[in-house]
Image (cartoon, rainbow, N blue to C red):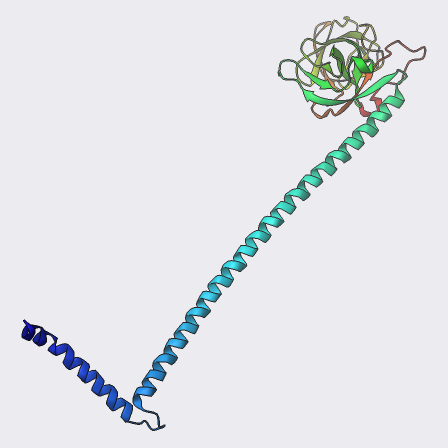
Amino acid sequence: MARRDLSSRAPLLLAAVIVAHVLLVSAQVGTAGGPSLLRTGIVGLVTRLQEGSWLAAGVLRSIVDGYVALWHVREENARLARDAEALRGALAEARASASGTEGLRALAGVRASVPWTTTGARVVAGSASPDYRSVTIDKGARDGVRRNMAVIAQGGVVGRVAIAAASASTVQFVVDRSAAVSGRVERTRSEGIALGNGDATLRFEYLSATADVQPDDAVVTAGLDGIYPAGLALGRVVEVRRAGPAYTRVTIKAAVDFSRLEYVLVIVSPRQPDVAPPRAGAEEGG
């Protein structure tokens, strides 16, 4: 058994002896510079290992630096994106504020042009149903607003107060399908009833056979319905159709842009003045 183990280890022992002999010889043999071959080889191996470690460390450092730099860039981009979003929000608020200021200034001009007592209100909501053209305003019974009070804006007639709650009211547009107002052609004084079409127009009906109505005629309130004072701008005639002596269709485009309403005036003293009032929105009718 011991002989078998010795015979199996013989090659390993022989190789170890050879390596030791080579190392011994290398240590004894000098190079042209003086140091032995073994020392020179060890120094060269260590130098290569150092160079390799430095190279690896440089590569690792570059990767780490690049990652850190990329992380900072991402943080900076995120910060810039937040700043840009904040600036956009501030710009939108500034524009809204400027628009609101212009609207209030225009409303003040309308208030100065009419002889009735009015209260200003802001539009806070639109109609929940597309079949009922209306808005909600932020003034109600506590502010003296009552049902069937006329509501006007910069262009002319908006509609009437349909519901007056304590602190808010619903205003039915004059163009709603169930709305009606007595009207008068300003040029000829021909009178009729303006009925809402549900869009931005009204149809002018119940005109006499002798009535004179032409496209581009201005139509104002006649003051005969007990809601709207006389002389408020309703709109302008955009279409006239006749069949013989009778009118079959007279269409009025409303004076007010209902899609851009922000502020309105509620007329809280609808009594007719002794002197005919200037027509609200007359300057916008042209």
